[in-house]
Image 1 (cartoon, rainbow, N blue to C red):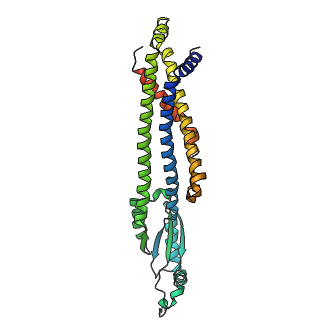
Image 2: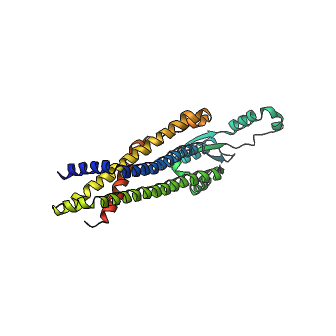
Image 3: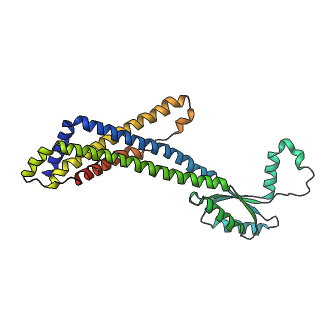
Length: 291
């Protein structure tokens, strides 16, 4: 009986105090819209960042005097490493042919060479989780210590840039989410507190009739959840309008914008986040009031 009453009371309060609740919903919706835009931006940057490691490679140069059996042994040893996703072997002859192809317009550069000066090499593709400043450096040192490996080349600055980019994205997203969430909770706290004092006479009457604290608090918690849910839907609607505006309108001017992806998870997550933050704000407001 208490739950249906709480829902009915919350709905009546929302309609009766519609202008206060509308203002709160707009504020919550705008705040969640900012969270959505941030998530949308960071999600697309993260997509780009996750594709960068796929192009990251490490070149292992082998000793020129290695036999075919020794080369196979080095390749087998490297393949067994858990940080290696894949490798491609290039013989000395293949390296020379590739160089000749690259210098086909300047073929005289290679004239006069009595022997092939190039070394056989192995191009490594590392697993994404191991691409970091310290990780790639340690991997390069370990591979260089393998018998038959002459030198190891890798883009240290590229690895560092990838690592810093991912860490920065994580930190920025956490800071923005916490800041906006705190603002939404404060808005809900203030709204519910105002609504409580506007209904104080009504509350005093039902207290005299024997209503418990939970019975009185229930409608306010539900009202906070409804406002948060409405704000989440509003923020989601604004975000979708923004997404379609930039992908269908601005993409005519900047075609690259067509590649932007809207994270589907937000469609479910945003209203739920709104409900949670709304209930938290209402719970803090009611919890600080003596009944």
